[in-house]
Image (cartoon, rainbow, N blue to C red; front, top):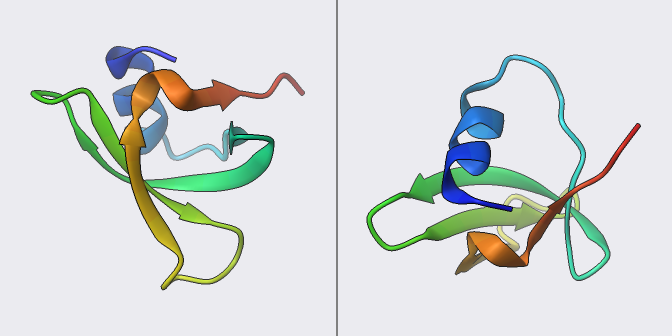
Length: 61
């Protein structure tokens, strides 16, 4: 995924399915300057990771 798409998903009111290493995640923050995103893995709000946006994959419906 590129930084623009990550920002679009983060700003969207719609639910977009995004995965990191095959696991569903929620985008919590996008750092466009560094090409990074903070994501919540699964349903636990405390389980967050900051990763390069290129590692995120948008899943087709």
